[in-house]
Image (cartoon, rainbow, N blue to C red; front, side, top):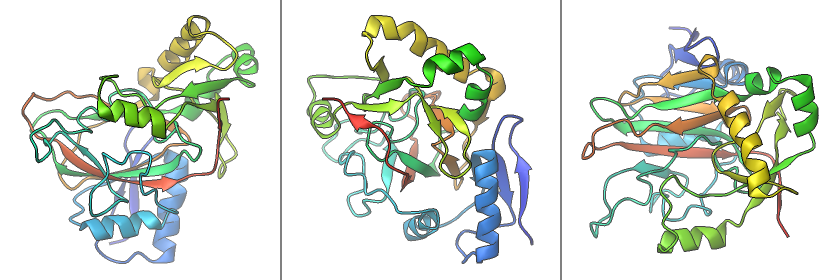
Length: 283
């Protein structure tokens, strides 16, 4: 069966059909996948019954993998290339460190000097209902701004943090994260290194704009996030077991909705492909 691609929504995304990631991919097949990844921003691979090793090996086709030193509590103890997105409690009964991972609009690793090129998330245990993830097209978010707004935000930098939706500043994890990941200033408009297109680079983890106070920054940040997440720019993914979703962090943003019953298990595992250096530490 030859490869084919089915659009997932008008705005972005494609399902890759006719592929088994447990089997080796030819260079020609991978090139087709990579081209569509750059064109559509998100790729969905259904019914992929693969091992952790195969997940990591396929991910490496896209570039060097992050070992998640910036998120040491969330990575798999035996596979540092795998980030756990899970609500399964820890062995001592404490809530999972990644229970609330992703429940804000964001782009992966934007709070580091080497933001992610792409992420490959594999669904392992999925709630019977819900647990969805939404994605939005940041090319379209930028392209549909007025010329005046584009000119205003072009020179701006935004301060990205690693904060989570549920913030406990007294916890060891929050103190550790603040030390490992000091705030990073990233351009509000980034040029995609492979396509050359401009994309808005913003999100709920942006605390402030460089050179402005938080009070001054908030109306603009709020507007840009609201604009970027308009329904016509968005694809909502309903997870199934053995799904793999690959997304381009350089031109998309995403959010985990947390839309499932308390007590239902949701366990996914993610590889993160390193991107090109971007941003700078604040002095």
